[in-house]
Image 1 (tube, rainbow, N blue to C red):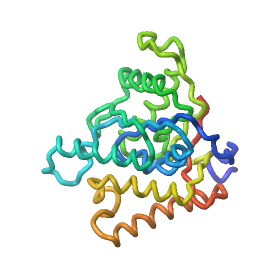
Image 2: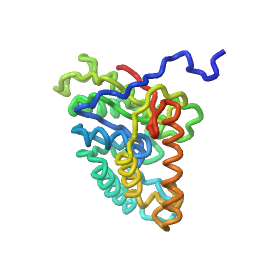
Image 3: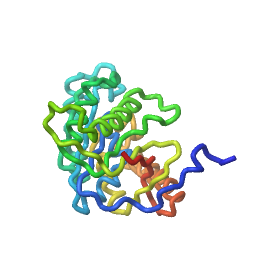
Length: 250
């Protein structure tokens, strides 16, 4: 018996070739940075054009029940734009759905397919919608929308009213996978950029980063935590640090 559910599936030991265009589809501001920030930076540093698509407005991203919703949404947008710039990502697109209420609808699948056809990424990155015991409904839904929109974007009979040519990415990389079979190396520059991009999301310091924006000690602990995760992930693939994914071929 295999020791893991997917041990029978060969791992992809080689990183992907340098892509010309990439797209990360995330449920919330900061998800793409956590899932693939180092990879996005390495690719944009190599000349890739990159887009981050954010599905929700981030309006649930606070533990303060009295916070003004509109002000939080505006701040999270500003933070995402700053983080994208740190990673060399030139475009942030917003689907504007209410945080915590993201639904898998035909209209959203069509909107995402339109963005894929417009930007024509070689690689699409997103949440793994099949991750076992993933509690956040937005993460599950964003991942499934990304996969389904990729399929729709490649098929010429979908959405002829868009007047956009079909597009088939070379690969889909899904972060937070239970049994990753693909790794992308993260060197020191990419690691530093990932951390810097995450720290742009100051409104999330308390909720997702252990107060990293509040004190030097908390920041150090957060950096050590990210470093530990990436070293552990990389060790399985013979890399010092890595971001790991489930790889699909559309």
